[in-house]
Image (cartoon, rainbow, N blue to C red; front, side, top):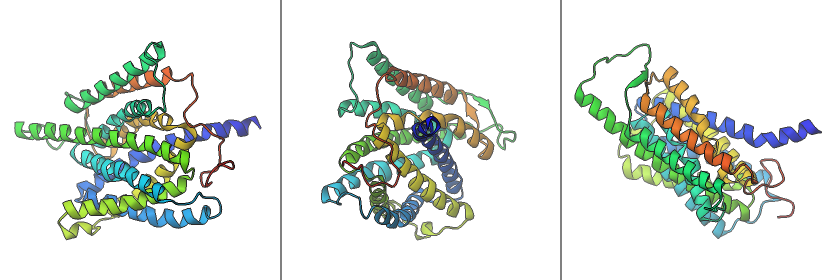
Length: 348
């Protein structure tokens, strides 16, 4: 009985660790596909469309007897969540990765806990008492995390560890300037994506309080994301050939993104948000740094720079100060554990 209770209590933690691993794999595959010429706009449309085809039938089948009624208010809220979490966030993060690297994307994703905490305080999901030492540590840790992200974005620094083979040992000054500018542009896009995802996480927590059915939320979330992303793609991607998948890596990226980046990740995050609160979900982002650095170095031949290492260390230090400071209180939204496909609680 104790083992079963421990497994149930550990499920959200294990699920979020798995999500971070899948997320790093997604950014790495996306980078590889875009290096082959795939449009990131098209990737987002296809992945959300495939996820919608998988989720919508499952949502209506598994929750047909127990889901709350689908109202216009609920659909409008999900539409707004899709703007923040898919249309804006996914386009910004994939654009940022195309300019920089998956390592930078995972490192700057550590802004998400800080942004989420601030938004949770603003919307009353977290209490902040400035006279309390722990509240002061929360504020200080948040500022430290943001400063670390700025270091990673604005300062690249000398290389610390390079791949075994370097085709260009002596780049020209113009090439170095272009690389630095691309690194900065990529960092700004990824920071914007982090803020958008934080707003989305807090928004999901608010929506799930009134409509406790994760699978329905995620299904319409992907559907609206498909429609919005398709409109964005038609506006910015003028080449008709961009809609053609011309290589295996592009097809693999679409399938992986749909199954693991959307169906699994969105579903698990919504499940954990409802049970543990938005700050809990955001707290796992620091785990992706080591995973991304390893995958980027091994599979993409990326160089590790001193700015990335210093900035990432500052981000993690500041953020875990925030987590320690709130360790004495229960997570927001903690409820009785139920299966992922349940429509809502018995007493809802």
